Length: 246
Ligand SMILES: Cc1cc2nc3c(=O)[nH]c(=O)nc-3n(C[C@H](O)[C@H](O)[C@H](O)COP(=O)(O)O)c2cc1C
Image 1: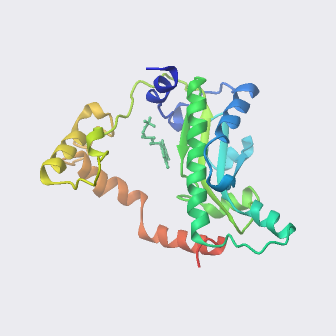
Image 2: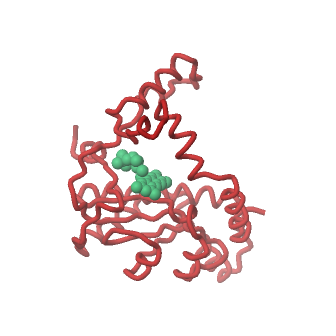
């Protein structure tokens, strides 16, 4: 196994409560950002911007880590360029937005891999659009059109060594060769059993909380607390206001 693969296979999220006060050196931080923007990006457009938050902004947004980066799907920059050049193209529709989401995700993951290789911890979170989007727009003076704050990346040294590594369900349930192999009852049961295996180190005390299986807890308790239809409807309104959907 080469060093890059080793590093990728040891990726571990640092939880918010586990960031220490230790500072990231400017050299390391610059290297992370440089690596981040080398990610693939559609049409060489780099349809994103990154805001490095200051301490006051981190505090107001309830974020931890020495450095917090906000990744924004950003078509405002291209709006400015095209207007200056008198071009007639529009970015006010859904496809650019979707492409921007992909550009951001890849850039974030490049930053994650770079940080991990330097022994720096990271937390990717979508506490952007799942929380108070208006607050982000106001505090950071984001343009009202063409910009959508998608992900935060919190970077810092972990206080305590991360002992648990969240595992993944078996690769055979995820990778399909040649065609989609639908989930029959045997496979479904096998996946449910895997989720119940404490070695996977997902949430482990569902039994104490009164749930029979991990997935009972996950579908009945966890997801409904995160993903509500009203929240999606609100997001659609925001995307309309920003201009990405009609
Ligand atoms: C879009 C997205 C949002 C996430 N939000 C949070 C979050 O709010 N809080 C948190 O502790 N981890 C968050 N995570 C990290 C996941 O919980 C973590 O990747 C997962 O548990 C697997 O753990 P690992 O990264 O250590 O392998 C998020 C990850 C992604 C990709």
